[in-house]
Image (cartoon, rainbow, N blue to C red; front, side, top):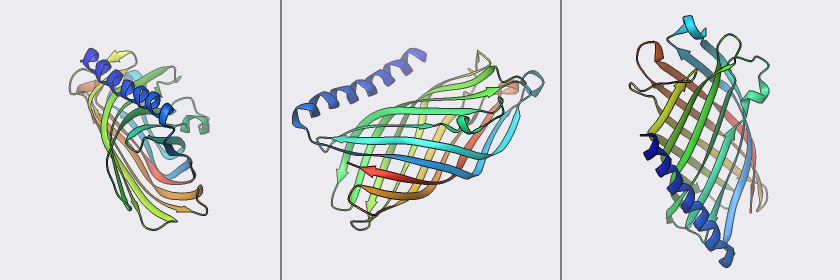
Amino acid sequence: MKKLLTLMVSASMLLSVAAVSLAAEDCNVKGKVYAEYMGFGKDSFKLNDKSQWGTDDKDKSQDILLGGKVVLMEKFVVSGDGHLGSLLKKDTEGKTTLFKAGGGYRVYEDEQIQLDLLGSYLQMSEKIGKDGKDLAKIDAFMIGADVAYLIDENMSVEGSVGYSPLQKVSVGGTEVKDKAPHVLTYNAKFNYYFTDNFGVSAGYNATQFTGGEGVNKVDHNLNGFTLGATCKF
């Protein structure tokens, strides 16, 4: 399973590298970067084995999201994003970090609709234990889709969904092999551009995984409403 996961992630990243190399000759590149604040949601992590880890964390979400997407030659897509909410938390326990990177292909585009199919690698970790020195960690290969609908030259709505068919989960260094949790991510947002390049956005973002058995049963939800700024190029 681990070798297959590594192979699929490597293939996805190689596709991205090949696309970048090809686009360097054609110089047909467009994309965007964004920064968002996420709040007014839930950041909860539950582990059945509370006696060992002392973990039943439940807080209001408070997160910083940074990310971007590049489209090369109007077809090849490279994307990445990160949740840096751990920088906003003072407590050691319960700090969450999440990073995702990958690539894909734009399967459809017209004057209003854009549809991308993506494969990506996701890593998510949560500090657990009474002293916060241990980690609950998940490494996953994600498949998903991004869709955008252009309302007019200033406004658009977009959304994405991702699911992990393959993943490796460990709690305190011990791998969870029985009914390992699958990761589900989804988001939606509205964009308004003041100029051709700069705009603001508001939306909703969620990441969750639930699975495992017995003391290794894990339930993690991170979600909230987002408000941010976007730069297109």
